[in-house]
Length: 442
Image: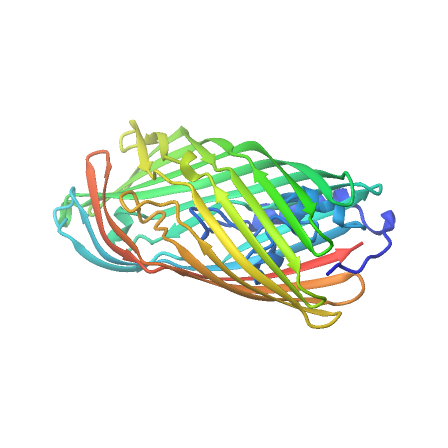
């Protein structure tokens, strides 16, 4: 199942100009998404959507720069691959919200959708051989992201208003083939993260009711690494291993508190020393592929994410009305998780290959600490896709995955300053994921 090869002429394109353009595009279009384990995103290559990423640690394109750099040595020609994934989340909450500081704080029924609009996740990779045994590549991807937006029209805003995290990962990589059976690759993860943490608080009631809208924005850079190896067990069987390190993000930004009474004018307090520390987790991946015959290939992947490094998110120097500052902690107490995927590829003819996939994604959220900001639960993914050879040098991949989330029960009281907010209910979440990928052998 090798791709057609072509001859590369360096005058065909300018890699530096291409890279500058793609950085700008991704910075403008990367959005807050996330429906994998916690706020992890598997779609760093839209071509993997069709088999539920069952070939995660054995990518057959320049996307190996991120997934497993060792596989870059399988690419005999320079290659450009780019694509986009559209993710539509469905996060409907049904239950009650009670707020201790509101006069009408009895449990108020709520039936609200927090999924928001469709989100787009772009990706870009460029690779080139370095002689007969080595290769280099660079990628721009979004490995982590989350978004829940319940709006400000119901009492759900007191439990969760708008929470989002977004990342861009610049990922250069090198690979070397030691012999026909073994290749090794290493890469860096230079990650930019920015996020919004917005929350309403309510006090009083009737004509004396006051809403406080807390808007907190922060960003940071972090650096990590990844490496992997590939073993050609037989001519028909490959084994791949990949590891991505933990990345520490020390975010800094601003905090604004706007007080809006029922009668009278709003007032705003602003601070510019907001800070928060966040650890993006390490991930280990193994993939095994086997060619049953000239038409059928089976793939299997296990991913292990060390979410236990994410215990809580503490926002320091959050501004409160009047200009004073406080710390706000959101306890998550995440646990380590597994992602398991099984896939198959069917080569119908020289131009068309069909993909199929089934996956199970374990949630890091525990029942006691689950909240509306991250109402995660275990998921099952069903996927289908196609790869079409447009001409000798060009391939198009298209894929679709539907994720079914098990019901996520919520029964939690969160305390912010003097306010206790009790959330009781459930989320029956799901997601639709569609992607399109272009691969060009240059």
